[in-house]
Length: 108
Image (cartoon, rainbow, N blue to C red; front, side, top):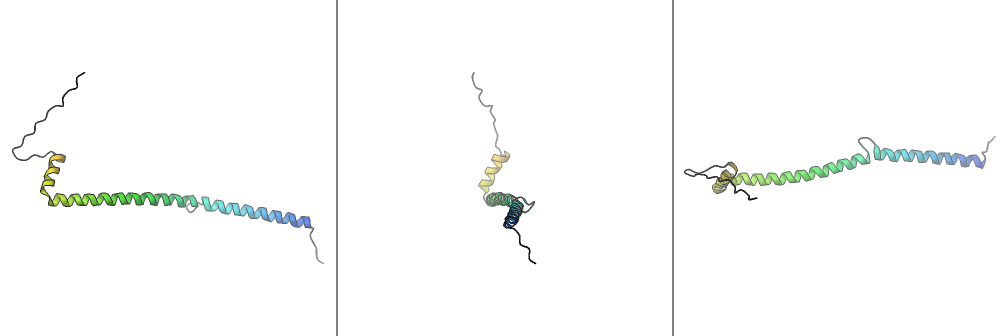
């Protein structure tokens, strides 16, 4: 003996299944976006960090190349070495005298 359901019951069951499917889909999408340590927002944060670190790395490589160039110049160019010694460290040659004057005072 076959029991047939009424068309109204079939529609109601279909609505429940659709609602359940929708709830599952919404939870799945929420999980994709907000999963701790794996979600889309975490992924975007990591991408921003990678971009910032790449930029910083590029800047440090440029500065490192400049410092290497400066070191080589200090090792090989005596004129440049003397210039740096005088400007940065205030060194003098033999028989040199430094005269320091106070800056002129402003008139009121």
